[in-house]
Image (tube, rainbow, N blue to C red; front, side, top):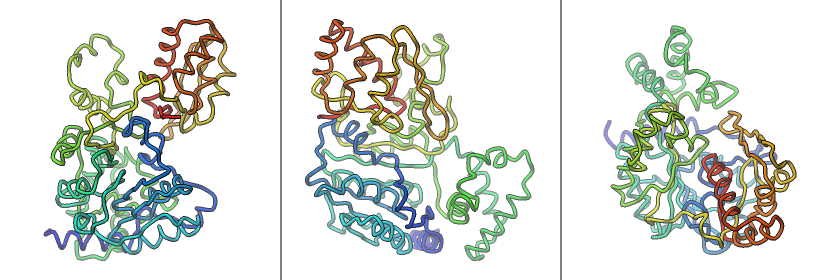
Length: 424
């Protein structure tokens, strides 16, 4: 398929079946949180915790679809002078996103109906932050798309990308290949969907997709994304996947550096999170971070997407050693520092259960008077230096002991995406 036909085919799909399907009226009762767009996470990972979002902050949502990311960002930045630019080539998708923004009364979004590949010619940059979720892997030349994004990124800016992952989508690509062989291409989009559903219904019970069906239920069922999700997942005309090493190569070709992987499975990019056997852990000792992440994705073998930040900066992540930073709990632990403080009992193990990616995860901490006191001041406002001073006065512990406790808490919760650092 040549470039013009490819673009036409993809545009036709999203005009007929905007993805993901959203009802603008739902904005009255909930705000969808999107990976990569939490300002606390972004600040910690890409701006050393020092970014002030109140003034002159510009965001581009490239391939904004029906608006999940642009709405999340615009809501967080509602009371600031920040500007969010939405760009998508589907007019139908844009209409849904605009309706969602109208329901919320958001007026800090600029709307563009354009292809991502046209960004360098639009004169819309530069940007502090660019979100591009689920777009590059639908281009015939993803690298061209990555270069287009990089061309409007500020020198100290950051990009969030989501690309399909290779190993967790094996059954998807098996079914895509089957559909290409069985479903005539001249059929209309509704006809293809009907035939695809019939084929799925006829699959043997031991087919890889049927065994994997629970993973994709929300994408293809009427109670989830329905026909829009099924077409996007199984009938898309352009769909490629990446492994860890290919993600790094894509970044390097655009003169960008991978900052960190994100999302509910971020901890599983560390092989130590997957293997307890110390003799096996020795096998990757001395290997680079990239090499360890490549090993980890094969050990886990269940990543269906790679979500990550890119930057031009070699070092842009906040450090627990920078004691001007404050510690903030996020997601299900947000604003729970005092509740955790109250629950900790010295010499007893406290178990905190929360949900990541629809799976229950347990954080355990052996209570003592020092970590109990530390949680009191992990409010996103008290600098680490002040936490150390206050806990020392309260408990009489040494500064070294307090620093060790803070580091232990941080290193346990950070892989779960529940703790970040920021300037007060």
